[in-house]
Image (cartoon, rainbow, N blue to C red; front, top):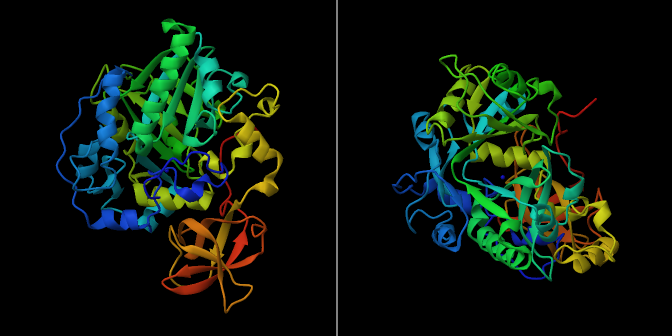
Length: 469
């Protein structure tokens, strides 16, 4: 799941969303995607996927790639392993985070695709995201230095949403989902739009850690030989369960016992009846508010495995359809699912809030903000807005207590008519501290007109994550 995000040193952590930190999560109504709709995708050469150990030489090309974000004229775009499948299914391809990605498909409109996800199941290609593996005796210590999460409390094969923090200021570089695979092995995913910045940050931090703790203390791999897809919706579990190969898999194969935030490596049954050459890493998670899975698919044993898996998932067209960026954006907004900078408090582990022992980057800055929320200049809110043109990213939020002299008090980060709520205009915004309470009446400037808005609680739809009863 905004304009190109600029990493601002010392930015208020809870207000970081207002500065648009995570480029890949552009609103479908933002100027960015509106430009994408009319831009032609330039031809791109297919990149041969391969497992690559991160080195300074490996990082150099991706720095150049990052500046091509959302631009059809700055150079060739990368393609995911499923690019040909997208074209075969009539996808409208647009530049997105340096990749040519599907906006929507020929069989469903944006609203139809959105509702299909809420009622059945949709499959999203998220292979543009960066998958990492970090292992070694120093892996846990390193990750607890660069993130504020209590990763030492994670059981094997469990995940947490976290963020990468800058040393000193505690500024947020990117959000990430971290999965502990074993005592000293971690799998994590970062955003494509922050790829160059993330890799440069991790490279520098890992080199410094190795210099202090030894070259063998950490092993870091960028998993370019793996595709990544997300299967989301109430019927997702039934679809995926039917493909699990129970004879080849050694882990528990009943997905009803795989809960939100957990993962397993499982084999699937291919079209010819054989088991997949390698297991898939199946995580029960997602960003739509619906039950669902993210599936990491290895390609080292079979370059065509991602396409085989997707075609199997799409076998029943009455159950599963492909979905693109447009539906992903509106689903995320309705679900109120955000990167942690929007509400950093719950990302910081309780065990890590003691100033005397907290040793993660920017701990003193972050803990002081958590201890005194009134000192924050801005707060994140949900808004419902009166009928008419919706408020899009960048729209000014104003205080209308004096209608003749509206005063700017915030900015909208994303907004659109909610398909699930029958077209009601909803938006997320940052507003001046004190104006964040539910029921507060504000205004939003839309096309030179101030439209009435009301602060409401989020999410707009109830999350349906699969948790133990």
